[in-house]
Image (tube, rainbow over all chains, first blue to last red; front, side, top):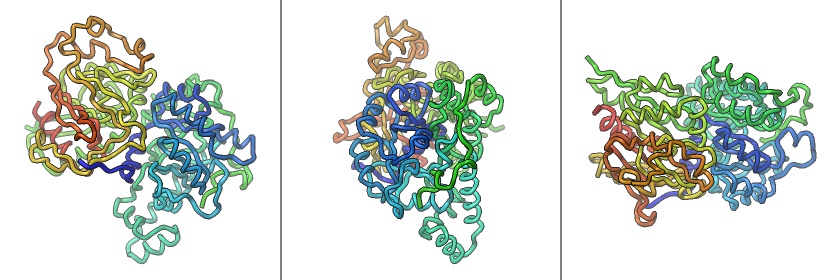
Length: 297
Length: 253
């Protein structure tokens, strides 16, 4: 009965266990406990939610490990934490800390303008953001065991997440329409991904080899259900919960609506009497350099 | 005339689609002549009532139980178990079917049904997740000497069996809502009515243990019509575990 550890199956397997669930950003132990009690399937431990990262500006880095550790000790659901794009030492620290998942995140200030982390070298699984199929497959090729849309974090504007879900779908349709190996090779070149990865996707009828969550701008139960109906496996909610008037209530409502995403009557019920949502900013009002989703390559 | 069978897979959170995929594959392959089998996602009480059997998938046990309670599914699930219908829980599902768990999280509730104690996250965090490439299940699944990939992800284990069957502890026998009290110690019990002490129950059978390097920990049990596994056959490419549950539990009604 020899065992194997840290295989891709196990890394992607944990993400499969998170499906149909809500992963909530939390900035302290109290919020982590609220998230757990509300039914979150995991929490993302970070010092500032994306909307505050926008507000404060400056360089945004991995959170203090002591802070992440406190949250890991407080809850028994999986704990994720973010490192900067390309910052493999931050990732090594998070692995040494034994977080359950690392988010190589565009929400933090990128450390490497050319390369993402070689994630296959790590024992801990990674989730990465993607705006299109090329980004998703490049991250998977580097070892990401879970993908999320980038959306536009910290805005409370769902439009960019919707946009990314649509683009990934359209790109997959293009891949499925390809007939000859040379066409596939050409598209693989365009996406900057290995031929085999694209061929596997086509053989698998367009299904990505990892779980795909929605993220970036989800602020209401309806937003969450929208992403689920569009085919996502689950949702990340950042500022949308703890920047609203009634975090506990909205956290519960979003968890419920991800379970019953196909039932408008239930979502109607869950949407009632939640108090003020996070205020938010429209994606269109952001200048290009202010968009976090443009980070990553 | 084919017998109609409705097999539900609890679809609150977790890897329910993976279970459904396995069952559909088997049904297509085996073409059971005497049965018309439908596999359905269950996320509401009215869908559960018409099911002949139920699978509770892997996922986050806290999330599944808290959401189940809030959407009004916890009591219907306990009713379903009390009716003696076949039920299989994997990983989070095993936790939910236990009568007692340790290392619980705040607010977590149990459905109950299996007379076992389960330790949540018994191996630690994700870094300690593991898979066993080949496992011999032939002692209970005929001919299955080399099951491919038993996957343990932040897995629980069964730490005691037949703890209530012979108990004289009046607290356990009479307390219908003891989860809150025990939360302080990270221990949660299913309410006693979920176990139904009035009824004579079969003993819990140990189906599978890990080897000595894993302290012979118990990872698969059966008590009558209820099956619990600490690992995830739904993440394996091997459908033999699903086929066995379907034929041994569901179609032998």
